[in-house]
Length: 139
Image (tube, rainbow, N blue to C red; front, side, top):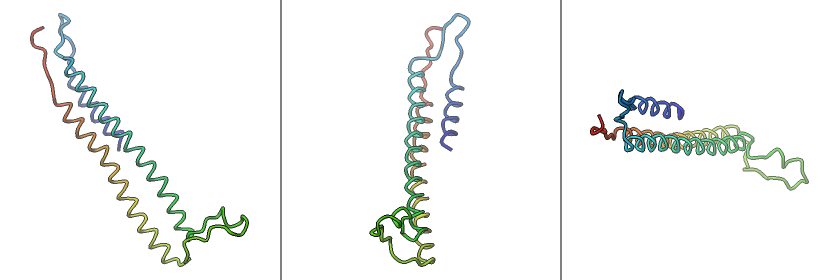
């Protein structure tokens, strides 16, 4: 989804660029160039931040989900020297399933809000791309 945001901004910005006239004069001003560059950077950096956030949340979620599914016991600590991880207590399947469902809902909400970072960047990029200045004196 994040790549599609960049594609949308790229198509909108490409349609705003006009070729120079036969005399070599252009109506594409420096203002337009900087506005389009700011729009692209805004969308790109916000998508980069959202992607990094999604990665961190996904990593923590997979680790926590695995810990919940194993009943709170860590497999690497069981065979060590006897004083391994005690765990979260209670190996009830129903308790593990309920805890995993709560974890999943919380994880999903965090992923949705991190996706909103990129959506805000897309909105700002669209607003920036609408500002134009046409050079009229050179035509």
